[in-house]
Image 1: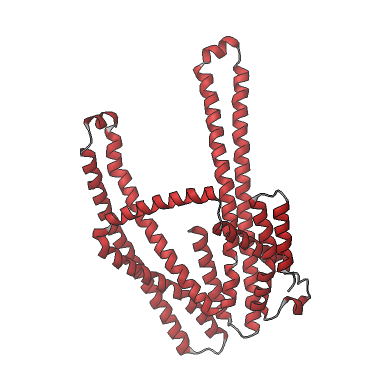
Image 2: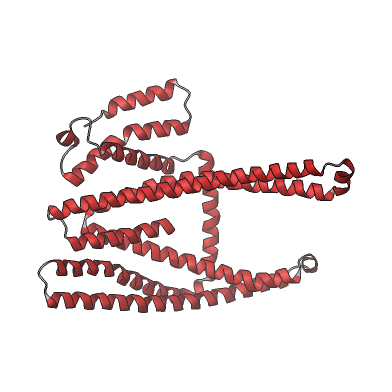
Length: 391
């Protein structure tokens, strides 16, 4: 091994007990110290079938630093998700409980449409499964054209691709129609329940609430809620089935490349977590800054007589300009963080694609996979990355 885990653990414990370091720093130190070496050794054994010392000596090769950084990021994400802070854990638990209660209430309202939803789920599964096999047979076509051409094999593969495409289209259409029927039925029941609750209210309720607000809740908000629920369920089920299916097909094509590609997920998750924290905090500061600017403008307009009498128009304009500049600086910081986040995500995706192509070429040379299988794997990886990135 390139490093000793016992010595690093002892050093880390000594630093943690004898110095004043916060929890976040200790997490980063331990993650960066303990995880990279074993992960690097395991990855090298899987991809090359050799150890670090036999290939590059005890200090490792040039790729050691990249894999060490990747392993450290994955370890940090694992620690954050497994051992979260108490405050964040309690808040997240409360939100989860509220979401669970709301979800159960929605399921109760959807109970009359159980049969309709089951059939829609079946067509959803068929659409996703048929769609998943299209890249697989695309790779088969490339293998047939790249080797000894056989008309029967080529025709069979093309027919199967056409059948899977047709099945995916028909199933997707039936799925969409059934989900729309379920949405309409769910929306009607919600409107009836809401209307029944409204007519039971006291007379004072209708004196304080405008009629337009009540009718808007009945017509617009219920429709939006019904569509949002059905859309989220549709997207969740589709993404889950497609992700599991694509991972299974990718493992069947090359389990080594699949494990290599899965290294991107914890890195992106860690970047997303850091970005969300900074973006949420800066967005709140931007809103507060805009409120202060509006408050300054409102005070000036409300007291325009006093401003005119003391001849302070220029100073008030300068004060309003200072508030706007604070807002501008905060927005610039927020947009800069967004740009850096997008850059890091794309660089991570680029590095993983280059690594996939490099090791794919090695596996083709060794006869562990064909060119068509690599093309199919690339198509699956791109689709899987889009699913994870969007959903």
